[in-house]
Length: 70
Image (cartoon, rainbow, N blue to C red; front, side, top):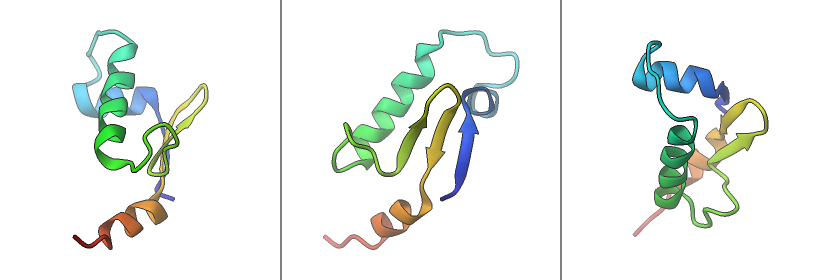
């Protein structure tokens, strides 16, 4: 596991601390990442939601993804 990241940490790193936008913007971007990365986006293994906090990036799943062939 890489670790838990708060929604605030993500928005600050991606758009800057002064960013003012819709709360759903981050959700939409994570949704799109899951569509591209996950075999089953509805049951994510690489980017998990941490309720009332943010997201968890799972390294063991990412490691397996790097070992894919084809």
